Length: 240
Image (cartoon, rainbow, N blue to C red; front, side, top):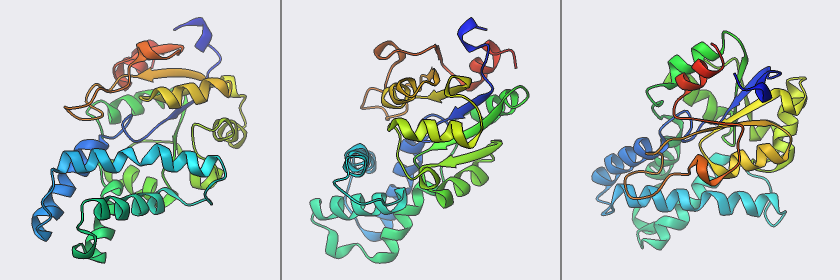
């Protein structure tokens, strides 16, 4: 184990892209709903454009330009905007819109996730730390059978990652010092935010996280304490 990680007591693990495969799962559900509603779109492109609205929405809230809303509300606003951009807003009914928003509640874990988390729990407290809302994360974790000890949601913390206070609030709630938390994430912006807040960081590379047509974030492009390619590899390194 790297000496810098010797005092780690808690692993805070991101969810979307790090633990579950959001892009495949959402695109599949977009395809199913599009076929049923005669919506002529590329499911993958539609999903990518939907996700593209995510970080700008967080920035608007974090800057104070927009009031607080949970992730379901942000997903719904982005979906409405995207359907209007496609010129199909009047043809896509309320039930289909609600079903699409709930697509983010039902996503498959990456193949290494359940085993890796189970092993890590033998030595550490393992918490989800996500921008998802409480209901969303509860559905995801239950549906994917993810063995977390607890979940910490932006909805509970009242701030979104990568704001530093989100990570510090997690440390406060778990009664540990920031440097005793290892933030595990597949996104450079999440790793950067955690590092600024004083957490240790593990970059988990997910080459397929953004689908076949986009380049996923890479450990080489950010600063982290450790880089791994799976949660099981992280368990190996940490002696779990």
